[in-house]
Image 1: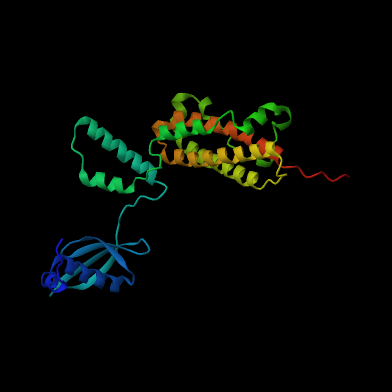
Image 2: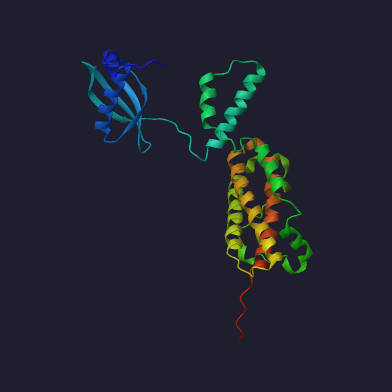
Length: 278
């Protein structure tokens, strides 16, 4: 590309749309008192967002290339929060796939916006999340083998986690009523993710001899699986809709039962304090 001197560009810049927007932006920032990003401009109004994420609708009149009578109003702009983003993107992707399969023309702006939001390692299909949960919960894990080998002494050691592990088993509810429990299932997924977060904290704090390879393997497998379960449950909760309740309920109930066994192993792993003799 050839070099163009600034003086040549300036001959076209004065009075251009770019110049007017810069002048308008400067006036808006003086009115708002903060730096803003221009989102849309019209002859007598504009939409901007400030550095704190607040939207502003500005009304004005242009006189000799400058805005006059600038008035700032709160803008009614619907935004998608971080927690709702995965579900929104999954819905948009399903819509694009449906449009493409039906032969309808795709909106390029919509496709471009989505491409800018998608992340390579993120899950946008609930089925992928549930499949990942299955893969992350292996019965060959050292902690699981220990539980089965010493079930008589390990099982039932859940008193420290009493009241935190969800007890409702949604797969036992009548299928025709399950959809009405969607909100409760959302809450239960969040609570269950919290249990796995506590398993991570409690297990990470356990200290034992460096040479104790058995405890080390059990400890590490607990942490790895709990980290995966916590992350995947959070994703499942964000992606689940009322049409996904049945298959999500199955994963929830399976992980809830698994959590009971994990917390029992955590209690076994951590030495108990001796009781005071009376």
